[in-house]
Length: 158
Image 1 (spheres, rainbow, N blue to C red):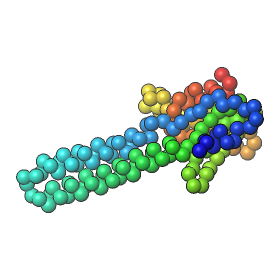
Image 2 (image 1 turned 90 degrees about the vertical axis):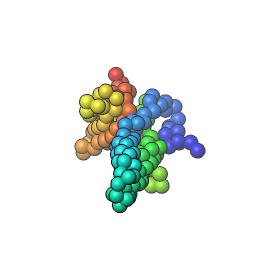
Image 3 (image 1 turned 90 degrees about the horizontal axis):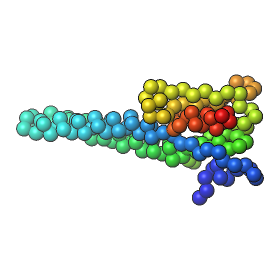
Image 4 (image 1 turned 45 degrees about the vertical axis):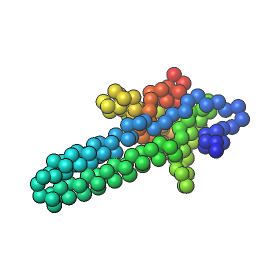
């Protein structure tokens, strides 16, 4: 199966950059997983004490593990269904699996590109990209994109 970007390229249009959502989106789920493991360790430390107390911690650990699994799966799935590309003519942003949401902005209609990076974003090279188009204040916000400065440079032609 070909990607959305490959299917919508116009004759003679060249891809300058294929971007992706940054791996940092996994961190919240991984932190909850660490909390689940910590709850499991606490549950095992109560093994010689009251059995109902150990059961409470076991249930907490299991609940946190399920929540972590869902969060990690959602992050993976969002990264998998999102396509971001900069061509010589436009910026293409597509997300969705069954229902599809796309935003394609022609290069000559882009007014400005804004990069928002926190301190961790600067350290790990991720951030949000806001692409503002001409007209009625149209804009696209792409969250947690990897290498946002590189993408901005490809869009602005720097």
